[in-house]
Length: 178
Image 1: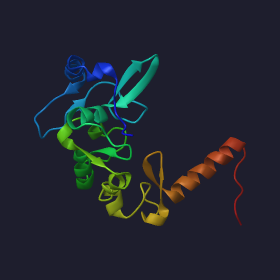
Image 2: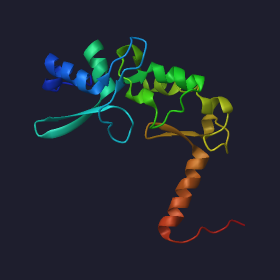
Image 3: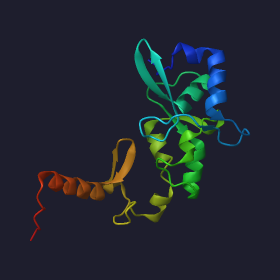
């Protein structure tokens, strides 16, 4: 079953036009159209909240725009930002929560991608071309990469952070290995 945004007030053309006027800065066709409204779930992506049947639901703005211009999103697909992929590969965007491409809702800058395609689109990014993890400590090779919470992490740095937090939680200093 497709993941379809069916809230009635965004299916109402007048409500959609009002949302676009109030929340999206529309530029030229080749420019990013930035969502200037709320961002949801600390993700940096533009979002819209709706209350339907007494339940509040938050939907990403770029997913709404995809559905408005292209129809339903299949359940196993992501909406990928092409503009971000190009900027990330060029080294002009570091990604992360401050990335302005996360707020882009220009339908010409979006595409459907499988989870694998979505991850591979980042493969030519600046961290990967250096050959080291973000902390510049370990090789950025498949054996050292884990995916958690939609991001890729250096397995060795992540394990060290988990160990550090474990000992902090226990309230003791870790033993030195001899």
